[in-house]
Length: 435
Image (cartoon, rainbow, N blue to C red; front, top):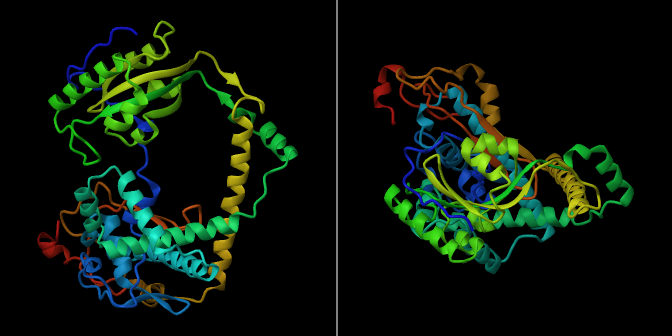
């Protein structure tokens, strides 16, 4: 193994590059729980945690009925709070009404599918729920304190968390049951798909990498280093362990401060073009250099973090793959089956929605009071991000749960909006609005 240069600090050498392939999405299950499409059983009254951040909104108001089962305003407001990240008081009535309606759409579909799951007998037992809760807490890579803190910030209690896990599993089991009837594609279909998409089956010139990441900041995701000095010491100690012959993947699982640790640090295959866009030029050049041996490690600071990269494979030319190439046929089969499952689950959800009796009282209020939806913001509001962008994905996919993702920017107004909830004080009193 070549001599490895130890870390010497990040600030002077950090390149402002975007390490996009390491932006490993937080576990989908936990994202669902903390993003806001969590339904809790409100038949016995709402939890106090859910009402936080929903000032001037009666949490007991019914936003919608699904086959007679109410969805309370507290659930919608919980979603607003989570999506706006505490800045919901600055949204204009127009933005607030739009966000509420989109969040409610997701909650309605979630409730429709859960009721279907109850009829199909796919609701999990208590032991299964407990096992999944423990699994998600462990795989979140958060300390118990940090996990509880995020739950509290999301307006959730242990009971509401379990209820969300129950609903997610119930609908997931339902979709698996529905899509379980899909058969494997025939050889003729596999051949047709491959022949029509040959450009997708090319191994580009590039490398396959693994990484151990040390984060000097205290991000709370399993970090053991909270300063650059600590990160340098830890990085150099890890390098010594690797040079002594210890397994890279095992060390990554144990010591890396990034979600890629769950895959033993594996980052997959990266084309040369992606490599140049992601890493500093000298790092990309070194990894593509034939003189740099396969299996060697390369420490490098990037964007304030320390990366210990391991070169696993290198391809110096594009390679056209065939159906007989390792893994290609299996990939085609997975894509075909996955596409069918997605279409079937979406169609099932559409039918379920058509069959359900849904009363959307929130939408009715908007229709009855269209001229009350002001877009005004208070003086001093941040105009840099003027538009609130709420994107609700409520299709019945594998997770089969409404997943609301919002990018709301600060905004406010002083009038009641058409959904019946009051916003922040008027512009003249904006100084008193929560920040």
